[in-house]
Image 1 (tube, rainbow, N blue to C red):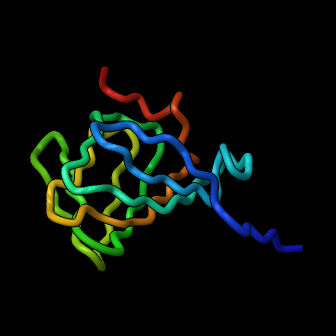
Image 2: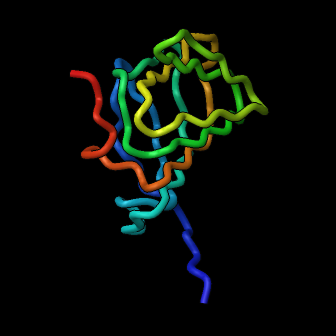
Length: 120
């Protein structure tokens, strides 16, 4: 039988400003280790520490622009675009533009604080 997920769980975010993370599927909300699905709302001027995760992260931007810094530069991902951040590669997310960004993030396997490997 299918499992209905009637609402997400809010998770505390890393970064210089509060960002709303609503996890629908993942280690926190459904005890799912295979994948995480989260809806993100990042304010203008938000940035998080860099990371070298042990998971692939698939990001679909719904509104605004998400900036993704990587070792060779940066990529701006606009509404209607997607990005794949590959496991083992250093990245850092930010939303420097007016209005911030809203996006969906899928991590495979699921996100965890132990496997994200944030910069100190």
